[in-house]
Image 1 (cartoon, rainbow, N blue to C red):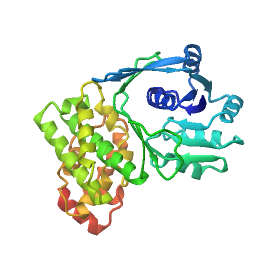
Image 2 (image 1 turned 30 degrees about the horizontal axis):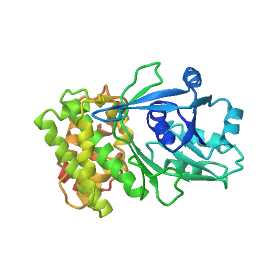
Image 3 (image 1 turned 180 degrees about the vertical axis):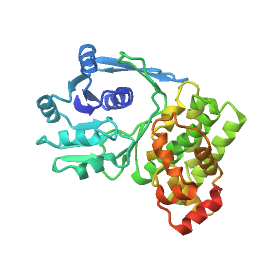
Image 4 (image 1 turned 120 degrees about the vertical axis):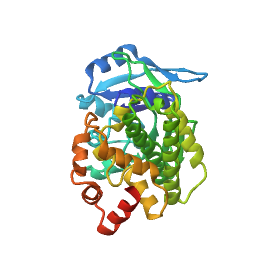
Length: 357
């Protein structure tokens, strides 16, 4: 059996990447900083993943797993020279640190690294930022999509939504087999499609839903007003992506699938979690500002965006993690926000004000 080492034994690592690697006939070795979690994995050597929703195979046994501490570099170094695949799901803040540890090893054989992170070209970025290069190491960028709700503490088992998707950059080698979950595609398009149509809708629904007193995203779809907003926002985001990619096939099906997932009450996806870190999520090249710009420059409807901009200025969202730091940019009104936060020039500021006020 092939071996893979995965950095990050958290919910995504165990609940999503572990089963995918097992399906590809890899023995999985996790690396983590949580010593209790490491001990549990080494003692149990297996865990279960439960899929929510109406699915025939609602559980997966992930077997023959082991774990090692990130602090044990010598053990990691030995393992890295035994594996053919290295992967991570540690979060954008820590993936560079993980890659720098990997890059200290002098590989003797060809090995592939995939960062399964919610970050633009994570694998390529950390390789580019690394001081050393390794001729035996190939990096592949991935677009990952999976919702995992809060879990029970002290359990190795993980509860996940039934849906899951991994799109790997088609221009590189193919270490994972094509399946219902794993596909190969054009990275730029796939990343933007997911960022705008899924993460962008997620963000708009979060701020809309919180303003209406909802706690979970699926509650929004129970009201006519909520469904109407979701349809409007989805339509405008699809339009923006179509203008960007000059591509219209499969977008509607993709968007309908997203709304089906968000409206399902099998997962309690908290709006406060989705809304946090607005300074990043509303920044100029992100899931809200970029599709908005494309729509405005092409004189297309922006009603959902206008509604969110209005809410951001009028509603007290101060209890959302990171909101006060972000909201400071509205201190002197919308023109100040457009100029200082999004970096628009006078011509575009006037254009935006015409559409958003």
